[in-house]
Amino acid sequence: MKTTHALFVLLLVSLSVDVVQAGGPSEFSRYFKDRTFRFDYFHTGTKGEERISADKMYEDGGWPGSMTALVDTMNLGEYVFEIIDATSNRTIYSRGYSSLFNEWQTTDEALAGTYRTFQESVRFPYPLRKFQLKILRRNKQMVFSEIYSSVIDPSAIEIHHGNRAANVRSFDVFSSGDAHAKVDIAILGDGYTREELPKFRKDVAHFTDVLFSTEPFKHRKKDFNVHAVEVESQASGINQPDKALWVENALGTTYSSFGSARYVLTDENRVVRDYAAAVPYDFLFILVNTNRYGGGGIFQLYATCFTVGETPATAWQADYVFVHEFGHSFAGLGDEYYGSPVAYNEFYQKGVEPWEPNIASNISRTSLKWNDLVKTQTLLPTPWNKVVYDSMENERGKLKRDMPGYAEKRQAILDAERSVLDNKQLAGTVGAFEGAGYNSTGLFRPSIDCRMFSLSLTDFDPVCTRAINRMIDFYTK
Picture (cartoon, rainbow, N blue to C red):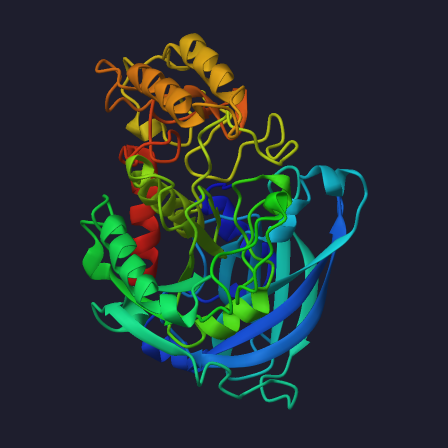
């Protein structure tokens, strides 16, 4: 879900008279105080139609983000919001992001003309003076156009200044330094009762170790702070609508989001944000206290992950999901797989280059977005025994979880798929491998395998690794 850095900067300049360039704390203090402004809004619409309306505004604790990387240069996300100083007409802050609403718009429910409303938020350093908030969305040609605008007085009496997280317990998992110069992750738990909070602490420690044992996070651990927020639910576990199981879990996470059985999301945005305000954070992760496979991740929103394998033999799958979903929410990486069922219709426009850094439709050697990593002798598209792999994917798609021997049959197919992906001749090769972004044809991924492609503990490929490092650099350099 990306375009080029140059195009993004030109677009910002065309939308406002001037843009604040990277500077030090003195530039930050010219426009902001070291607090967080949170703007909550309702996002309403159906397929091809949307409307944004203001909800509430908050002073949301101290500002945890960078004081130098104020204007977004990443060009990631379906949306971007801009903060424009009303006095100078300068764009003083911006960030790209994606949302529940834009994913829901690709589902059968939206396609049928149903209208729904989702709670959403944007957060930014607290402006000193009156400012304009703009929200823009990509059109079908991937160009941003304005869909919402409002002028806000930061001294308005409607802005909530109370501490909504005053009684929320939290702790630091590890700290590497000042939040302004680090990436701050907040991990929240859902479906943990008071008696299960010790398990939450163990889960946090485990998955933090998993993430920072995986490159490039392992090499960049000193650039992160990790905090945990203890969220107490009235009952254990989370909602499973397809099994008629409903639980009083505090954050409202649920399986079967958008009709996909393993997709775990919550639409209780305000509740999540209020709990998260107990700690400084740039990125959110929600651990769900279940042993059922599932998770989710939306860029700059949050990631979710189940915490216990259904059997000891499948316990590693939670480790896979945790890192995979964080790849979505942190670096804007797209799903490279295409055989598994999803709830989306035409998630990617045919013939339009996706904004995700690891998915491409244009594979011309001169314009492929990762062409600098492709060796001259590598064929484009890159042959990879796709026909054999697809036949195995078809067999896996026929399996039903309630059939006898499901786990063994599924594992046998996964092992056979692994034999295709463990191709020594293609190991480390960056090219254009057809099959990505839920499409068997027409979209391409950089490598034969990656943490964003197969259900395995394989590493991120070079393109995904670069995207992750680029995001870390943006927040810390």
